[in-house]
Length: 123
Image 1 (cartoon, one colour):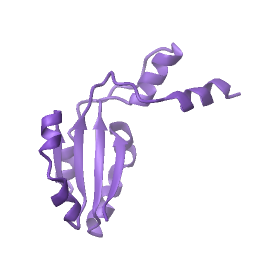
Image 2: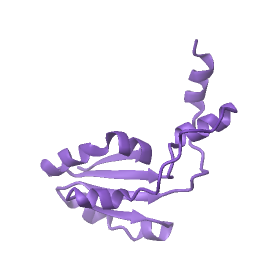
Image 3: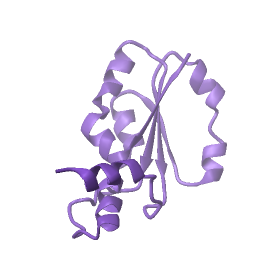
Image 4: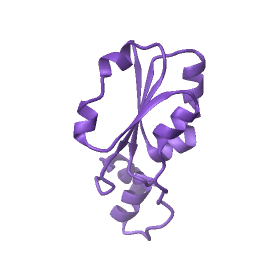
């Protein structure tokens, strides 16, 4: 049974090298990178808190190209049509990792309610 990792582009930059372990052990791990070209939680958290907006921008990183450079099959998704065209049955049957680099709307706000409440009540 495949394992699916849903992560953002910032998290993939900080923690994504585990993909090489999945490759080494031929594990069916599907990495889904939601790529908004920003540290989205930081960006939207600053906006919601009325704080200065700094330190959240990322360059346009092609995570599919990075995965391919490590020997992992990958694709970059730019539209819902491209996502629908992905053969998930084939990906899930393989004994190898796969990465989907999905470009998302940078203005889409994640549900940050719990995190924001924790920040508001922090000492």
